[in-house]
Length: 281
Image (cartoon, rainbow, N blue to C red; front, side, top):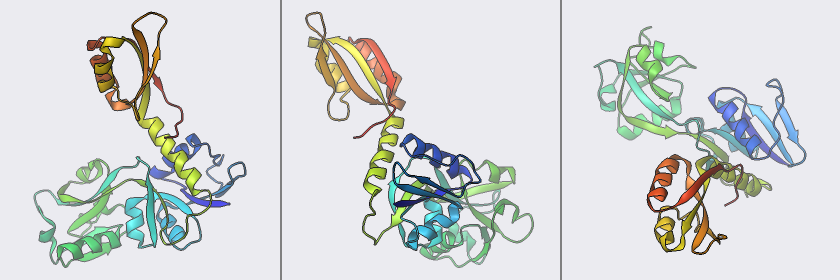
């Protein structure tokens, strides 16, 4: 039976559970449940602290896990990215008092507070900067005001929490993070991974694309096909009247209205858009 770690709380938890549910896997009914067995799909889910998941997977205790790239790299575990899941996007950034720093090189000899010690130490080493890393479990934005650090490094989505604390983000992002499916890199592919990966990829496609249908006259079809090439070409079917066809193609959800406008200008009519509930590409 496939053993999969799922975040038990925080920003990753709800999104991961929702994605697994959309992929057809039964999830726990209560947040107090630490383990849930989906007998139909032969998967055992373990609900763990997001920071610990890479350790369990890297140590071979569990086959797979869902966690953030930031937590994976900060863990130092022997686990690797299997699939990007396109949620929980964030960046690992440096911040300090407004106007105080503009580059990581200005942190030479300074104290930097963070909850991501290994991630920060690796970055400082790569940049040739020698600084003291102050490890905190959270609320690093208060470290400067409390006098325990000169700067901070933290994972942020918008940076609003740091700005509210009177801090200013500086330099380029240390890294870009998002939710990942991970597994131990040097182990054979566990049984059940192929199906899980295919299902999750199907959820990603269903979230990113819509199905677009429209009618158009045959002589106008080439221009319309250029607008809606689909994944491997559109589906084209004859209509009941001469010289007209019905076309169906997958279109990126973010481009929906622009594509509809372009199709209408190209002569398409009866343009309809439908959500995709599931997909296998």
